[in-house]
Length: 108
Image 1 (cartoon, rainbow, N blue to C red):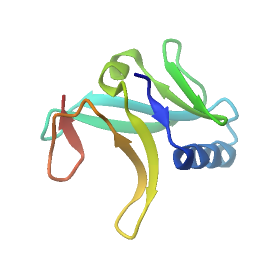
Image 2: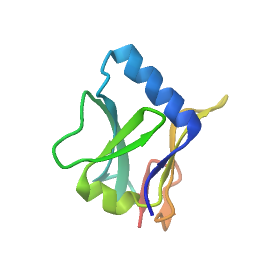
Image 3: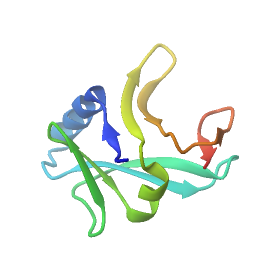
């Protein structure tokens, strides 16, 4: 199962690409140790992919994932959500077995 980018997330990523004037750029998505459940997501912007990154594309939007994080992210859908309570990227990860109450960390 591959990592997928929703249509809304793709639009947002392309907007950031244009704002930052980084045509080879993309959203860097990863997993690191930490948080109350053991693992947490991190996102950043990268001007281009690193040497061993997995590059996921949809409609010109790019997401870069390092090989270690890719193991925990297989099957994940990256979405963009804008509500009264939250605006930002949302990760629907089928590998998550439990998450903390705040939703910032998880276990697989």
